[in-house]
Every structure is written in C-alpha cells, then in structure tokens.
Length: 262
Image 1 (tube, rainbow, N blue to C red):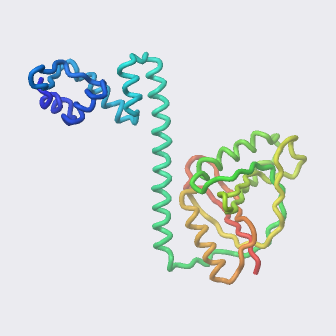
Image 2 (cartoon, rainbow, N blue to C red):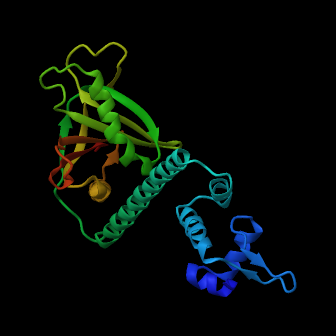
Image 3 (tube, rainbow, N blue to C red):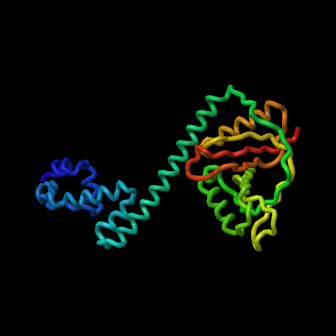
C-alpha cells in the first residue's frame, strides 16, 4: 500500500508515518530504491493501532519505543498500563476539582451584591483536640482532609462520644494553609498522639448545607458579613462537621466559625 493509502486506513497523517519511521517505531514494508517512496503492508495496521493507542494513553515516544521495539512482556506492559490508568484518574480528578472551583467562583461573582444575614455571634468554649496537623496548598485540601480525619480516628479508642465532634481549623500562611484536623476528646489522649488546644473565642457562625465543593462560597459570604459589620478577624477559621454521614454530601451540615474581635 502506498503511504497515502496506509495513512488513510490507519487514520493518521503521512507526516506522522514518516516520523514513526525516522524513530524506528514503524518501518515501511518496502522503500523504493529509486524514488524513496514508502509502502506498507496491511498486516502492519495492528502495529500502528498499538502505537497510536499507547501514545494516546500519554506514554512518551521513548516509552512507546521500549514497549514496541524491546518486546516488553505482557506482565510488564499490564503494569505500565495500570500505572498510567492511575495517573489519568488522578489527572481527571484534578481537572474535576478545578472545574468545580471555577463554577464556585462564578457563583461567588453572581452573589457579590447579595448579603446574607444568617450569621450569629456567639461564644465558643475552649476545646482539646486529638488531631493531625499539616501545611497544604488550598487545592490539596479536598484530597487530604478526609484521610487526615481517618488517621486520627484510627488512634482513638472506641470511647462513647469520642467521634461526635469533628473539627478542622484553617490558617493561611506564606507557605500555604496550616490545617488542624481532629476530634474533641475529653479523656487521656492515646500515647504519642498529637494534641491541639483551641482557645475559647467569640466567633461569627453560620451553617453550610451540602457539598464541600461549594463551602468556599459560604465562607466568602460570612467573611463579607464580618467586614461589612466592622469586626476584625481574630484567629484561624474553624469548621465543625455536624453531619457528614455517607458519600452523598447533599445531606451534610457544617457549622462555619470565624473568631473575631469586635
């Protein structure tokens, strides 16, 4: 088959076939010694299909060459494909997170002229947390908060009421976001556990209903209320997770708590 016909059959460009030839990935079945015209055998189509599939999966051409030319065994190829699948799934989740953030930001813009009065100022008592701390970038929060809670829970004995008050605090710093995640715990902390004491404060509080994907909108509304009413931020914001059962976040209830000075 002439290169043009083989390109049409394989749904690639002739330029790409020449490039694959130059790289030694797909050598023509025959090259005319007189005019240099390349021609291909229909039996080479399965090689082209495999090559293009690997490239579309995101493998580099060097990786494709190793798979195609060095006769990688099926077990190793299966492992490479599984690893690539994990990478693609991570990329898809990252894209989904960015899209959700964009949608959230658009809703914030739409609400810029709308003020909510569903906030109260109340005194929060001091609380001791058995906790885990970390410094994270804002875009890392969704992936880390749940596992951090699970890690803390694994250290606590099954004392009645020990998991009823999950709290997280967030403080912006030059190096990212200082995060504290833990459970209010009124007994002797397990040996080696991390303990964080949250002081008694006066705070503006509101309720966020539903998914964590939109909680930043609720926080922005609360913070705008604080500024509009002339109060001063006084410490890391807190989230008290009132109800977080199940994977359906539409039923979740989170109390937002921002310490202030009047």
